[in-house]
Picture 1 (cartoon, helix red, strand yellow):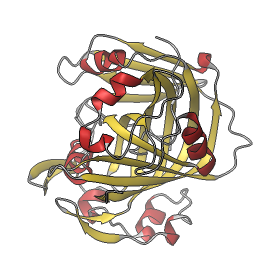
Picture 2 (cartoon, rainbow, N blue to C red):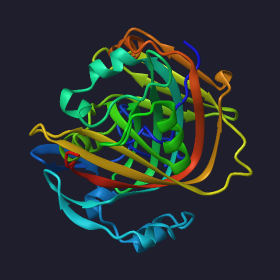
Picture 3 (tube, rainbow, N blue to C red):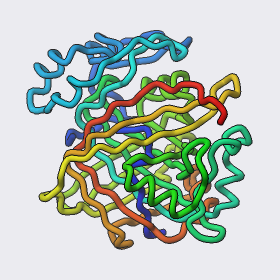
Picture 4 (tube, rainbow, N blue to C red):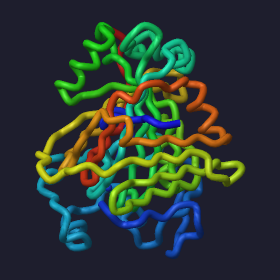
Length: 328
């Protein structure tokens, strides 16, 4: 299956630089076990999370990564929060990369996948009769408060909670505002730290599996493996675009979901995009599905035309803890 393209808006999750990422293979470093939200979690011994639990001083980051521009983070204050465990919000992602493909999908299927509580406030945007929009994003977080990891976000593009749903006009408005709204359907990651924090703290549909994010001279290849069979399941191959003339931009991606008590919550990520480019050329993206659980799920969405592809080789992000969403 060819043609996919996603927007900065929906991967959510959110999030970093050009070092190879470690995944399901045996880690080349020593780990230690810590307790998070009732779970025993292996983390990099002496890594950022082991030492600072999501609140490292920027002076430490500056010393360990002197090539990273930290000016943006200096203007963002962190606060201690209880999200099922003690943490700090927002979480900082200092150096990251991502590719996003946005496709049309079967509108009835998207509505079927969203819980009734969510549909009371947000609905999939209908871009034309019977068709909604989904965003598929592959993130490589090279250096962040949670060490490093890879993540795949599959989200439904929705209206803002409580706002009118004008379909393509709402999508255009979100694009002009650089503030996108989505409901996250799937969010696999390749470290247990990212999985537990995401599930317990952010109410996100995360699971642990192998994800390989590789950059070639002219393309980015992302391979997602099935968590049960360990076989290659989904391959996303995208073309590198010219980012030489890119201007820095800020994009906010907000999401709604349901917490363990059945309450609707919302959280968001703001991204500082340092180098980025986009295209609507379908040949820039190739999506290949196999027969694993994620492939079957994606196939059920009946993806159609690729609306947009975004290549963002260099961005920073701040991920804010979710809060209850008041009914309008």
